[in-house]
Length: 189
Image (cartoon, rainbow, N blue to C red):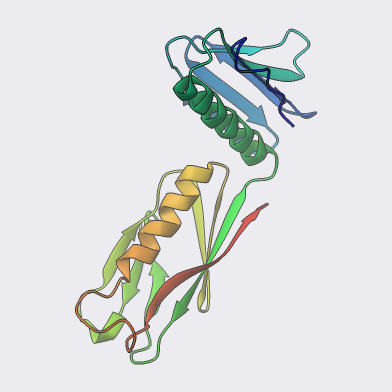
C-alpha cells in the first residue's frame, strides 16, 4: 500500500518494508537485501528524495514540487522499489512455450550456459542464439522454457530475447505460427 498527499503540498509516497528485508539508501543508490538475494539500483531525479525510515519498516519518496512529471517519476520509483522487494522475497518467473507446425526445433543451453540455442527453426541450418542476462536462470523442460530470477527487468529481458529470436520475418505469420511464445508471468521461483 502506498499513501499520497494532495498535489498542492507536493509528493509523498510511503512503501512498507516486510519482515526479513533490509533496505538502505546511500545518496542515489537503493539497495534491497532479502532471503533470495540482493538488488541494487540507482534512482535519482532532481527535487525528489528517497529516504529509509529510522524504524526500518518503510521507505518514503517525497518532493516539495507537485508537478505532473515529478509525481509520475515518484510513482515509477515506488514501482521499482516494490519490484525489488518482491524480487528478493519471492522472485519472478516467466514461462515460454515452443510451438512448431512445420519443423521440430531443438532448444538447448549453450556450453557456457550464457545463451539459449534454437536449432532447426523453420528448417534453418544455423542455430539462432539468444543471450541470457546475468543473474537469470533458464530451465528447459521439453517444449517449456522457464526463465526465473530476482531482478524483474533481467528476467523479462531474457524472455523477450528468446521470444524475439524466433520472430518470423520472411514467411506469412498467419500460416507459419512457429516460434517461442510467452504463456505465463508469475511471482515466485
